Image 1: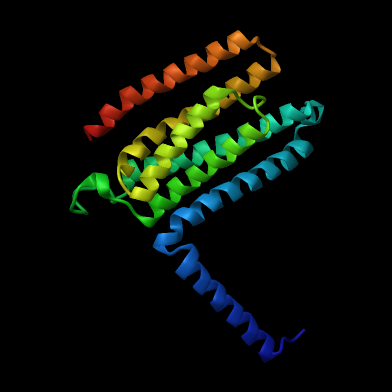
Image 2 (image 1 turned 30 degrees about the horizontal axis):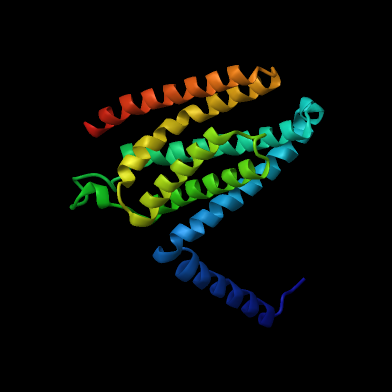
Length: 226
């Protein structure tokens, strides 16, 4: 069916307006932090719904879980996807990007940032806010005070680096340790399924925290010598 010239012009006009909106507002430097945070929260919602949909059709045991177990499964899938995203971005900025290279840029490395680095950190902040919201909404089913403290401190630290543009290189160095999150999520999930005692669950969480701290204390000095 032929489309009238008037309709084509109207469509092009809407496309141009949308392009101007995205370029001058959503992706303009002053708005990138807020856009990325909202985008991160929206992506968490999309990931939650997709996880629920896919799990319902492809995992027979999913429907046999209790309501809170299904919510926790969906929540841990979001956590895993965020960990993969921020680990990939961190590895890129630390090892491959020219942003923090002395050969490509002048000035103090701790004050360097780019729209992409700000966007990546903003998505991470959006995740922490979304996850904190779920933890508070279902408290303490998705985690106790240790989760609240961890997410709050992590979110504040990443947000400061994002808004100030300071220390982003070191922030990405630390965020490389998110590579351990998928394994921790698997461990916690099997722990929940096996209905381990609260004391054992606390011990596992503490051991995981000690392991992550040891990894960060070992890896960060090595990266600083590069």
